[in-house]
Length: 252
Image (tube, rainbow, N blue to C red; front, top):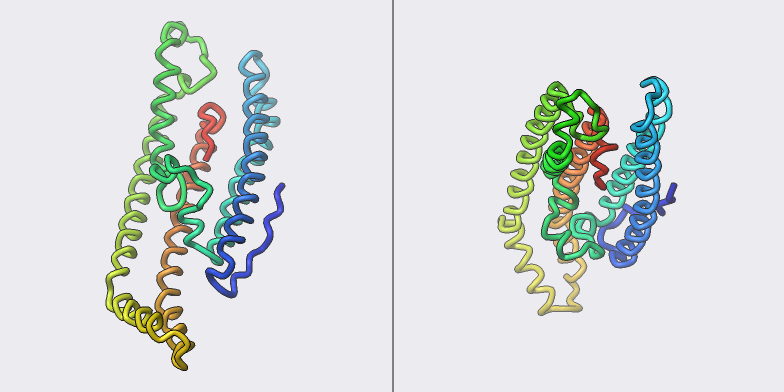
């Protein structure tokens, strides 16, 4: 498993460029391992689709592989949370993400509700060409096999996820509005004075005022990012609970 260097969290936004590059390198390494773990899991699951091995045998082999995948995701979000303490802005808008990824991102990552749209779209595609086999009682070995009970559970998970996602989005919007509060307006005047009076004896004092004003803003962003990442991870674990991770092969 990749080793993430621990950032210096005693100060914020110092050496942001170097820290962003270090996290980018960690992410690339983590992604290679993630793909390998998912491939191992999918390969093992496909072997059981072609034979009649007892469910206990399948579970004994697949469970550790699933746990390894989930543990790897948990490792990523723990690392991301630690890094956000050093520079939350980099985690919210990483420079290595493409313009397309940025356009569809939600608070520094993938939108949890999109996982359900993907599930329903893919299950529909897999179900349609195998309706005849299903009518004859034959298993398709993919999302077309989802039972009515499983779909009910997934729908309930989706409902809860959408509600939490909406709550976090509203909290994020309210925090964005604080950019126009009194403290930020005063800060703009302080920064303007600092630019006009560079080198003045009060320069250090004014820098302290800037930091004291911005720190709560960044801490608020860090809290919101943590909530968003927590929802992403719990959505993934919900997929595992209903045995969907293998068939959907979603890269979170």
